[in-house]
Image (cartoon, rainbow, N blue to C red; front, side):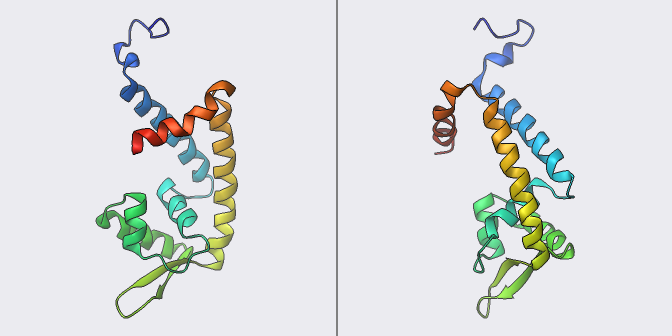
Length: 141
């Protein structure tokens, strides 16, 4: 490839470039969410449970691919910040739901995320945008 710097042979490897791009984008998103004292995982939970009253911590962990050992401190942090609360679903399960403060913060998260996504897509040439999301989804599937 002619656009690969001669001093970086890894730059020709798609997996390497994808990891570098993901790291750069996540660092940028983390910085933006840091302005409202949230981590990406915090914001992800808020976005996922928005408008729902039936998601358990195990369901959230499964969707977001977060281990149980990491879910406990994450949910405890959100609960301590009064962004979520737990509501009984049945005798064994509790739903994780947004509090009024959580709904307010969700609005900020949505605004930050929307702008971040628009900025991310703006970096991709117009001709490549229709192929971008299908290509990423193909890597996941």
